[in-house]
Every structure is written in C-alpha cells, then in structure tokens.
Image (tube, rainbow over all chains, first blue to last red; front, side, top):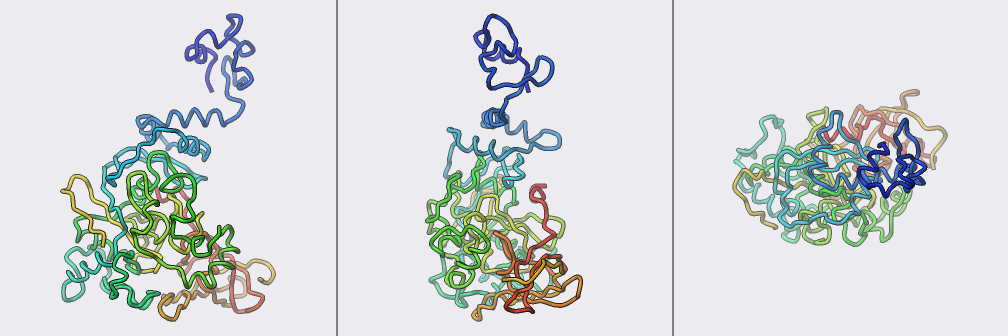
Length: 343
Length: 88
C-alpha cells in the first residue's frame, strides 16, 4: 500500500493528468485500487510480488528483511520472480558467504541469515575418503574425534549388513561413490578427522539454492538427465505416489542406487558445489526436538524429481545408516584451507 | 487395492534389517488404535515423496490391503514437524 504522493514523488508529475494528484487522474489507475484515505494498492498481488522481488534482489535489502521482528515470509511467486531476475552471480570456490538467504518449501518461504562464511566440499564424502578414516581408528574402533555424546555401542564401520552391495567398502570400483550406510555419530568424527564439520541444514540449503532461492541447484528447471533420482531409473517423470509405487518400487528400486559423486557436473550449485540433490541424502549437524535425530537434505536416487529439490529435507535417527544417506563436510573460513580429495 | 476406511494406528515395531543381500525392505508393524490388531508393511508403503522412515511410537493413518488382510498400505505419518522447524 502506498500513497498517491509516493507515486508523484517516485514517478514525477507526468504520472498524473490535469495536474491533479488523484487516483482517477493517475496514468496507472487501471493497475490500482483505493486502499484508505489517499492510499492505493495494486489490483493484483502479482505487482506487489514483483516489486518485492526487485527489492530483495539487493543483498542489503535481504539482510534488512531477514532481521524483521517475527521474520519475513515470502510467497512462491516472489521467489519465482527473484529467480528469474538477471544478475545472480555464480562462483566456483564453494564458499558460502555470510548473508541472508531465501530458504524453505514453497508453502513456507522465509529469509534466514547465515552468520559465518563456510567452504563446502565440492563433493559428498566418498568411500575412499571414508576408508582413510577407518584406517586411522584406534584399535578399539573409536577415534580421537568422536562426539562427546556418542553412545557406547556405536561403531564407525559402515553397516555392511544393510548395504545393497556387500563389497561397497572393499571393492575399488566404488571408491568414488558416496560413503553411505554411515551413521551420524561416524559422520561427525570423520569431518573432524579432516579438520572440518557437518554443515547446518540452513547452510546446506543456502549453498544449494544461492541468493535467488532456486528450486534446483542449477536453476528452476528440473533436469531429468542430470540428477540421480527415481525418474532417472524409471526413464520418465514419476508424478504421483501411485506412479512411484508402480513404476519404481518394484523392479527399478533394485537397479537404482548411488553412483559416483563426480558423475553429474551439471548438477552444480551457484557456488560450485556438485550433486547436492539426488544420489544420496546428506547428514547435517541440525537436530530438532529430539537430539537423537538429525536433519538430512537433498533427496536420493529413490525419490522422484519433485522431492530432490534444494529445500528437500528429512529427519533420521543419528544411530541409523541407510543406502540412501551419505554426507558432506564444510570448513569454517577462519581456519586454514584444507584441500578436498575427491576419491 | 485397500479395504474400507482409513484407520489410525501406532508403530510398535521396526526391524533395522532393510537392504542387504536379501533385499529385505525395512519391515514395520503398526497396531490399529481401535481394534488393536497388528499389520505389517515395508518402507515402500509410506506415502511420501521424501525420505521413507518411521519411528517406533509414531502415529499413522493407513489402509488394510485387500490382497493381504494382515498388511497395511498407504501409510501416512501424522506427527511431522512443520516446514519452518528446520530453520530455527
């Protein structure tokens, strides 16, 4: 809502005919409706949403909006306008700058601030990297990097009884595949072993969708050939649960699985992080009400395309391991840079 | 195909044996809140587009399979956190 004087101030006298600052004399009158004394509003909310997106395109404005008391909630249309605006700068250093980001599912979009810059690993942790951690364990199977609250019966050995491919951690052919069937209590010390940590779920989503809030890492358009998801294994879009059950859950689910982390260079986030959606869910450091659970992000090979978006999240027991869950590390930028080894 | 009305129940057992060489599909057991009968199902019956898992003690809505009267299907989780919870 704004006043006719606001229009005059912004657009000048030419915005009115006959020198009258009144609604019926405004050249924009067809777009406006009265909204109280001397005030008008747009007839369609789409105009307001376009203006909001234009405002939020400025990083300083996003920061200001993120700090509004009670939080700022946005419509999906604002996000779509924002994602379609030119000027989103892409980088390749995997560094997530500290600023406000548009996050959340379409029905609950919000702005949240990342307080410290972090560098993401370009790839999810691979089998070969995890094997080096296993080689560094103490004789009793523990490690110097274990979480202080780690339950006594936790083992850092992958849950091989559950692995679909029993030789996954022994056969070199899987060296560049993601480290899966690893529980959260083991992902945590692995990250510390490399001088890193798990990301928060907010950092993870911000790194995947960038400043424009895109739905997929590479943009708003799904790419059925560039993401490892159920649609890939079925060979066509999997639109409903019934379609997933009929077309994927029978035969395709036995063929599907995680594939090498460097196999999809096009599945790239605006800061250069690869394969964040699809292939495998990724552990984060974020817990909700139950400290025995953590948030996982990004979806895996057995979810339909619609569920492998930058905002996709699940909750999983920290002590569990799944063929569908791997992890990725981040490094705070106030510590010396550590090179990621890809295999 | 499922039988009749949807039912409400509570997950009373889950076996962490999904996957592996056997290809077993993470079996769960739900107890009907009303008649206290037990029904088994596997993770594929969880109606979601996202990550498929259920905790013991969780409340669900489900249907009984027409083909296998001791099996639950179309299992929907009822105690899910709100979408903004992950961003606290």
